[in-house]
Length: 320
Image 1 (cartoon, rainbow, N blue to C red):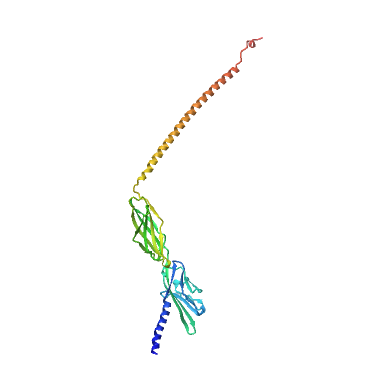
Image 2 (cartoon, one colour):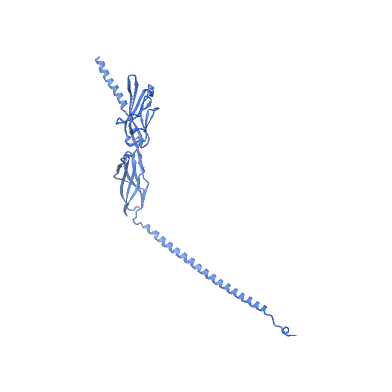
């Protein structure tokens, strides 16, 4: 008898530990900010029990009730006000949907199922699920600080926001014209919105122009956590900058302008002299035509006068 007791003791303890362990293992659930989260119950219903025999409810880590399905009907009397009109129960896969998920909804939730028997309600299932929220940061944006500019460098700031959880790192990536890439780690400034609890991040840095380089391209890189324990990398649009210090080739446009002006003046002079010569030729031709016309006019007048004056006949003037 004693030997039997010593054998059964560890077996009972092992069975109890396995039961407790099966109920203690948490399921992981992920959702995007302001979208729908799913809280699974993972109830197999091997006995094919009807909903009319069951009391099903979800509660958060503060024991506040999200949803209750009591013997076949929804019961909102015990539901906390922060969860009202935000949940829906899918009885096909025993999952509760939490709509418009907020950052403050993160945490551990419990699905509890009781079976109504003649002796009363008996707990037959309990499952925990841990909810994590995510929000994608906006594309990083580089802005030049207008109040701090230099002849041999530039001061830039990069910012991104509306993300969750906290960003992992943020840095500047500089690409020079000789294909060299340089990374500049910066002190990332982080702030959190009191209402939405989303994060905003920013970095700033002064960049000197490398000697002998005429231009460079700057990116801002942001690395964040994503769903399924993955990482996400966001890049800003390229920010291109050409230094203001003198470069020998910058004198070339001045000579091009001078040569263009000389060419224009010369062309205008040629056109002017051609126009003046042509005008003089036209004046001479017009003068010749005018003289010829005047001469012809005078000759015509003399002929008319000769025709109009008849010769006098002495016989006609004698009286009879």
